[in-house]
Length: 229
Image (cartoon, rainbow, N blue to C red; front, side):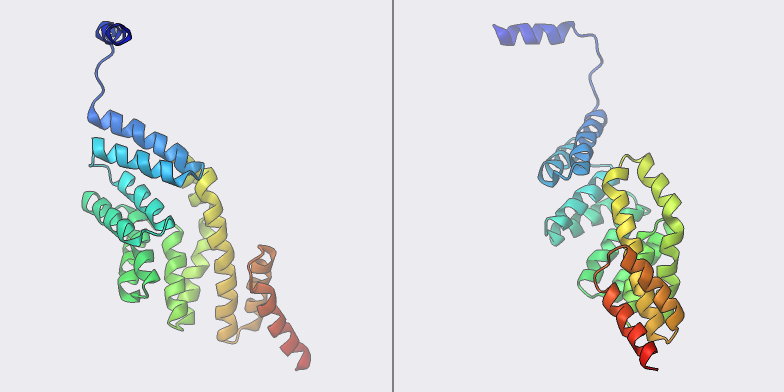
């Protein structure tokens, strides 16, 4: 009897039937809300529900890939980023994240390729600059690393605007502040390696203020050496 009433009520409802794309958007929004709360497993489910309804939106694959990466499924993350880029080759987050996957595997040439593409697509997105800095640091190319690390702190306002506009500010902005803090640390190390101790001290102090592990010890090695000299 209850089933009959519900069906009858639906017949009397003059609201237009939602399209698959509209349903997918609603499911994505639910996934995004859960994602912002840090509920990764349920966010993953809703992103998948969204894709099942409409698999033409790159952002959903990108976000799902990000969760898979956080959960340790790098193969699944690579697959989702690849699908996102097939839909939209200019998806800057998918480009950056794909570069990070290659960086994790120490495939630095491939990593550079994706990070540089990301910067070409959106020069105001901080993450690929930081990631490229790391790649050059690992290759002992300290001047090149400095070039990219130095950009990160200049992009705070653009990152704020980005995350406010897409509803990810509370979840993602702390990540920007983390990479800015680490960029200070690596800038300090780079300047130390090339012998510019004044700048090394300045950046390591900034990193120490941000509680970056290792910054205080690196700073001590410089100041102790200066005292001895």
